[in-house]
Image 1 (spheres, one colour):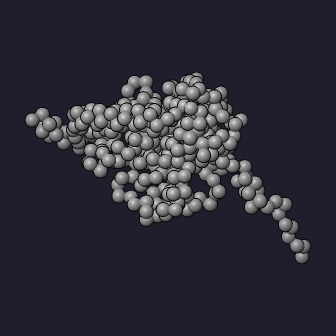
Image 2 (cartoon, one colour; image 1 turned 30 degrees about the vertical axis):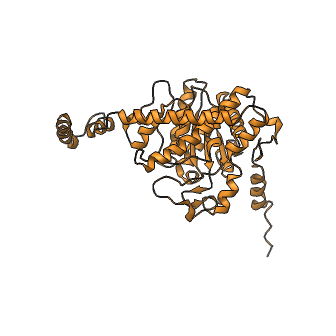
Image 3 (cartoon, one colour; image 1 turned 180 degrees about the vertical axis):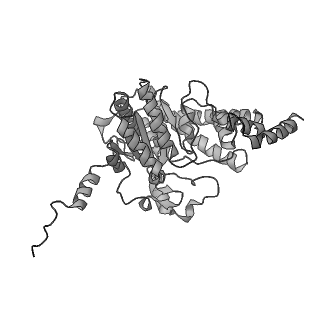
Length: 370
């Protein structure tokens, strides 16, 4: 009997060759030193300072939001500290006409894209006015359903393409979100139709308590782009310059008709998954926290700017005080907003009330009028 011939290729070797192509893109190292001069984005001194200002402001917003949550003055809240470079630098690379479809941790991006801060607070409280972006502010409400925003982004991006708009739709999820079917469907649809979309996976190492290596056998999440026939880039998500450069390049290619991009930003959340009872000490070690704190995006960017004479303690304190004042005023404005009524919920949920709710609507309407 003739012996079976050995396969002409080794599938494991082929996989390894693919995975080795996904090296981490970085511009600033942990000491704030440029390690990739050729990739430096063209940002003016004023733009570099503004990016730092927004990151510091966002760190304070996170701290104050946690305090407000503990006081019972905010509802649902997902901490963002540690992910400022991933979130703020990617939004900084956008244009006003671009659309952001955020996940529930991505409130800072839509605030910097134009959503008033008091409305972000109302969103946390579950108030319908928190979901009503002003005219000209191209954002959708933060998505609570994990991964659903990926499919929505493919649709919005295709709509932009069909209308001939020079704009992109960008969305965010976490490493856990990349395990959802919606994730694959979204990137595949956008790839098939060449839609101008940017898909960001903020790999902060844990989906609540589940570590990244339990999400997938893949060495990276970025390599999943191969299956959709689109570019995938692994980015140092603690490096604001790398995140900006990768996002800006993805945007440029998208508006020039070259289709979508998947970005995996390696980052870390310092706090719990949400303020709804998660205890990260049960699944993360203090050694891991310390190791990632050394990579802090604010620290490395501060060192970089200080070395260029563009940042100092006085500038940072001014930003901190301004953030505190803005937050104080925004929460007052949120407090002054009329409380949501049951009839409001019914009116916004249905264009035409179903028969079984019409009677209830009249009952509540009468109670609210008293």
